View 1 (cartoon, rainbow, N blue to C red):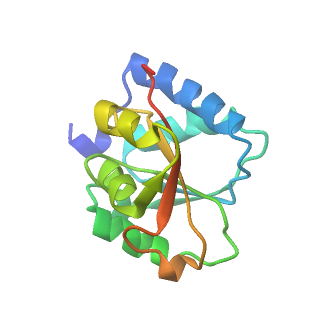
View 2 (view 1 turned 90 degrees about the horizontal axis):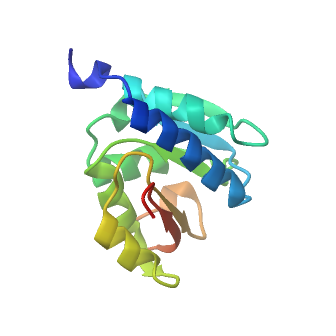
View 3 (view 1 turned 30 degrees about the horizontal axis):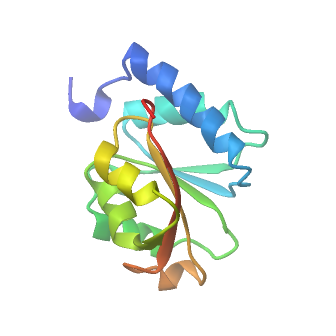
Length: 151
């Protein structure tokens, strides 16, 4: 089977649910989820979102599969500004590269932990920036938090 059609392993299903609980614990009211069309990202999202108090609008975006950080920024630049808090479910190395590139600053040891652990399946980074999605560019965000399943 192709990589795009590869399903989650048992461990990935368990970690997706845990990631959903951890994301829900942040208290961030997500307005929009942008999810790759790959089978394993769709499965991850389906399991993670069950842990949320409210399900955000979900858009399955083909361009997230195997996307570079620049391509991911381009997708985010197209996002309407009424979506204030966005969750992106994608793939490495693009997602980790995106977090690295956007984070001009970081709180606490979040960058050290992200650099040390990378982005294994179900890991997430929480970034914040001020401005419109069209103005999103390298270095404008603050890395607020990072979590990986073995943390």
